Amino acid sequence: MRTGRLIETGLLGLRRRWKVVLGVGGAILLFVFGTLAIRIVLWASIPYRGYGGAYTIVEIPEGAGAARALRLLERHGVVKPFAHALTYLGMTGRSRGIKAGEFSFNRPMTPREVFDKIIAGDVYYHKVTILEGLRSDEIFDHLSRYGFGAPDGYHEAFQDVSLIDDLDGEAVDLEGYLFPDTYSLQKGTGPETIVRMMVSRFREVFGPDRIEAAREAGFTVREAVTLASMIERETAHAEENELVSSVFHNRLKKRMRLQCDPTVIYALAMRNAWDGNIRKRDLSIDSRYNTYRYFGLPPGPIGNPGGGALAAALEPAETDFLYFVSKNTGRHHFSRTLEEHNRAVWEYQKKPYRLRRLARTRKESRKN
Image (cartoon, rainbow, N blue to C red):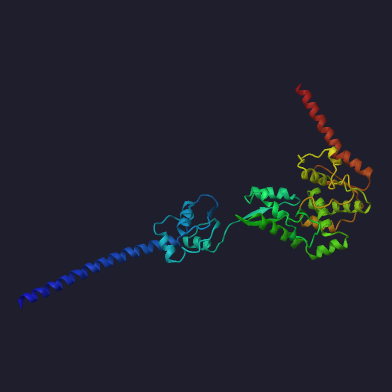
């Protein structure tokens, strides 16, 4: 009897000790997990910025999972290193749906905001500005410098005239139809997509109203774009567009040669013979693009005109000007007669050249 009581008493003591042990262990676990939870919440909710510049761009490669994305973000100072970061991402469902691309960060952000941005695919777009009047080969070189493919990679897309077959049935390429503008391009955007974007933008600007205006002016779309490309290459100031256009319109009506230097430059560029200088002998090269030798418009655009030049080609100023000459300031002097034009050529071209040559000669003689 006494032995039974002793056993019962021992068991009760053992239970009490286990309860104490379990209570202490539970408290410790609760403290550990509570502390971890607090650390995770603080890490996830406190904005962080560990990069020094105004912004940083992080490229997440195709197929990267949460672990690799996290390492890249930590390396660039976007997310603060934390041993339990993947635990948080897994618990909140942010370890899935990681998008590839470049992501720009320019302010302190919480890890929650950072990964929401990446999962949403809020990628960085490069702003690439294409200047008015550039030839297509110049445009492709420019895009290549921004990292959007090699110039040769645009050859096939450039010859896809199906994009404009309803506008220009004579086109053999897209010269003239790559509209100059500022484009937002995601890294990796290919030549075909970029060319389609530029042609689509041209169609927005040169819509049905302008197509009808060209028809009323007696031009095909190709002729209107060709004239606009010449205007664009001749002018450095948009306010002269209509004046230059009036000279070309007036000369066409009088069946005079257009004598447009940029058409000769284009002919030379087609032969890989353009070195940045136009010489007197170049004005006689045998090319249909040489408007010093052949009457009328050249066979196609010599560059890619902007909206202002396209409008000016169809709406010239009302003048009786037949000539213009550069003042070497980006602006031109316009003349009605050949005699007046020759005086302007002397004043703005020949006389300054002779004065510069005389000054060089005097400087060299003083040295000797």
